[in-house]
Length: 192
Ligand SMILES: Cc1cc2nc3c(=O)[nH]c(=O)nc-3n(C[C@H](O)[C@H](O)[C@H](O)COP(=O)(O)O)c2cc1C
Image 1 (cartoon, protein in one colour):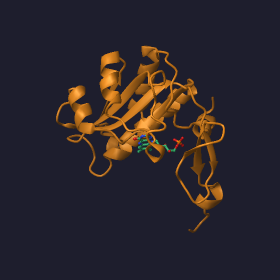
Image 2 (cartoon, protein in one colour):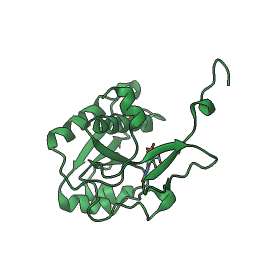
Image 3 (cartoon, protein in one colour):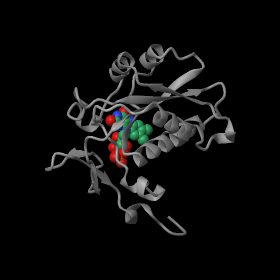
Image 4 (cartoon, helix red, strand yellow):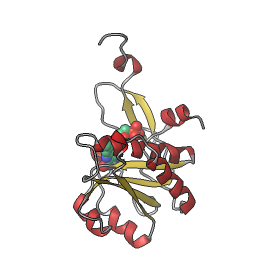
């Protein structure tokens, strides 16, 4: 898959097949995160891969899914993620004012690399950071930035044309529809 094709076809996935992701693939995804751009090349990030049943269950309780239509799109039993990659950021290392960009770049690298392998992902920011820190025994210097839920895709969300409302919704075909602003709305040339 070409990078551009991955970028335009990617959608957030919140329903997953109950199939394990090989550890080798998860390591490749972390590698993609590790090599992301980093402000002043300080590289303040670490990545915790969560696959053990008991830990996944605990982490799942700390996440909030598809807020606009919650709880309708919460993954139910049989749809839950196969793994998580938790991105943590060392604030003693991170560049002031930029550390969230580092984690954002790493997260998108991971998500697009997963997509290329037919693995869906949900970027989760509405999370209980304190609880996740306790569960994963994260040292004080780090903040939990982002949880990426991963698994083989079990839904087919579509991008649709934005009409006044940015809230995603369930379409007539039962799949999630994600309004996206048009290129016309967002692109200007040489001036605003
Ligand atoms: C910083 C950030 C935080 C997000 N947090 C959540 C979240 O907590 N729960 C969730 O279900 N989706 C979350 N998302 C996914 C967005 O809802 C999703 O990207 C958006 O609806 C657009 O859909 P798309 O990714 O399919 O294009 C987050 C995305 C970003 C970039």
